[in-house]
Image (cartoon, rainbow, N blue to C red; front, side):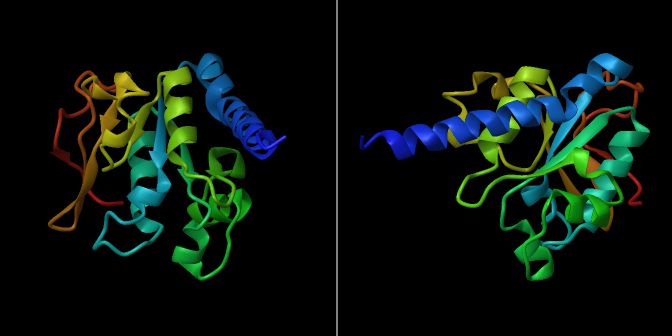
Length: 181
């Protein structure tokens, strides 16, 4: 009986991973665009190390311009960091100007990383994050493949993304600076 809470938590995580996979998964088959999943709780700190939505909006715009289907995954505390209160999928999607079907806020007490990494594994999506996920490499060896984790940030006020060469629109190669939106 002592294992029931852990089993229930694991079952809940599996259900949420399934929902995350459905969240974007069908779209790739429908329109053929490559997928990118954004580590929202990481990217929101890219501009001056202060949590804000502007870096996320800029990354979403740039990836959209380059032909990617995108989604954003947040830790449960993202709303508190951004607005001083809890924000759900709908509220964050609205604030970013995208539908709630493209945003996932994971449950309180659960890290977003497993959702993000499981989705990327199942769908083949690239991951947009400055996190190297070194503590997760044993369980996700594919993360060491070049181009699987795309770093980015701001330099001299300009957004840059280290997108893999051969990006879907034949865009610039690694470490290419992009005009901030």
